Length: 227
View 1 (tube, rainbow, N blue to C red):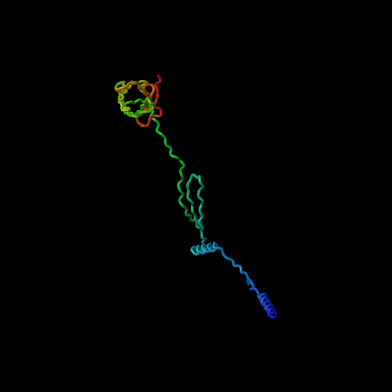
View 2 (cartoon, rainbow, N blue to C red):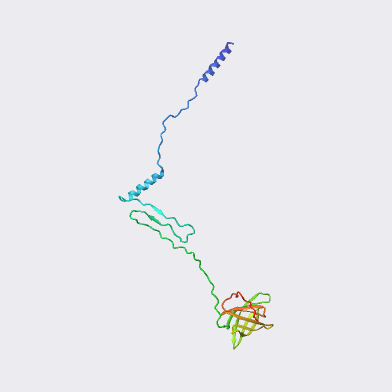
């Protein structure tokens, strides 16, 4: 019985001793806060540049600063580059060369108009276009000769030899005659509209035209006689 009482009292003493242990106190910094004033880096750079410029210049001189003019906005008709000047007491200037004005003119190309018809000249070699019964044109060349009042032309079309024989009408501006091959015959009519161009037809139906200079078929090839 006494032994149990002693054990109980010992346990109480141990628990009381643990409760009295003090927790570590947090140390609070109570020192004075010192505010430091920092100088911006830009100010340091400016002061450095100013000191360097003043060291290079003589007494009484002021360091100059470079300025640039803005370029022109889009749509301006004159192309320029920025002009750079140096401001200084002696008013010396350094100016870049400006570009030449940009030209907005577009080259114009015009076709040479056909030579006006003077005295008709039929003799020579012609580029001709002969319309077939299918409506397509066969291109070839034709050699023309004149004997007296009669014109004679020869050509090869669709692997066949053609002969054209005609007479002058309307003061030599028109030719009316017959064509023939080894198999067929027909009629033709030509009218010279420019010094180097004639239009016309064959058999009063199909186109037949020629040009002495150009290898391009005339815009208007087929033309029927008025009578």
